[in-house]
Image 1: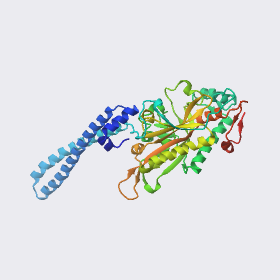
Image 2 (image 1 turned 60 degrees about the horizontal axis):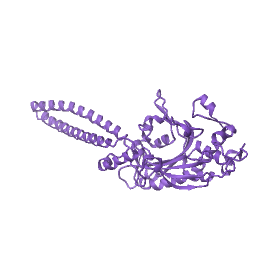
Image 3 (image 1 turned 45 degrees about the vertical axis):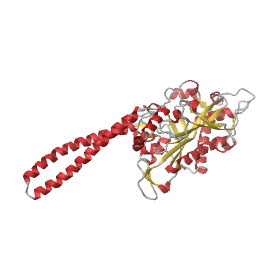
Image 4 (image 1 turned 30 degrees about the vertical axis):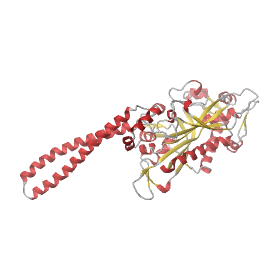
Length: 426
């Protein structure tokens, strides 16, 4: 969430952020400011009433010691009435504070000045392209045909057992999945300096609220109502909440975690070519990179995190591009976001395989993650960042399509062969 003081000082900037992101209602700012003013008035009145109560207690004690019981009785009666008034004010202050907190949770993060203003994907900016799409002397197949031909992925039986978007990976398909997970984790740990962490696959509402899934993305998450738990849509949620409600020492920053997990997303409203094959699943595997950093270094950390996410694409030899997302595509919680898109040779289009984001202190405020400055002073909120390093389904799709051969076989990139144990499919 945003700092309330920032909303007080820069209301127009917050309204503009809401407008350019297309999330929420700019009138939220006026409602927050009005509620904040009422909350502060109530708090002031409550403090004054408590001060009067303390004064009365001293006066009553003094009068009783002096034997002036009649005068003391009048003050005792006033104090009795004041106690009831204080109870009323305390209840009102709590009510206003909770309402204010709920409103603040609905206001999106403010985009960084470097984020282009835009209304949709057409306003995103391609910053870099690397690698060349393959030139085939045959008609390349899309990954779902390749996967079916070689018995790598069973979409139909997955739909029978669970539903559409829950495929089975079989034989070399399963081994390829496992190989990619290990490859991505090894890169993150050995070359990126990340600490591997294995997170829970379910979180409670406080955790979902801490990273911004609630109340913004309820429709995209599954929920286990009986237990009040949510299957995670990304490892970002449990890993970021690892330090929820904690104060870290500045000397520990930056903290870098990598985590493999299955991810569960309802993907409500998805349809058409975007959901065929591995393009959009309800359950998929991903390696996530998460960082907790000092506020002064978070944008340097963002660029390094981006490099960490691009490294496996380079090593796998997959053509990809880096895209700076415009305001409308940046998302509720992000201050700045890059997408990495890999070229799908069988579909002749770009597929997103990673989003790399700086949230500044937006998530840290919601999750109350702070650090204690080394030179003293009050604890400050950390900045949080994360990125996919990488999401597997579309990487698998791109690998199958990119490395397919005229005889129908699929070559495994050399860097991946120690992990797969085979160099060719088919």
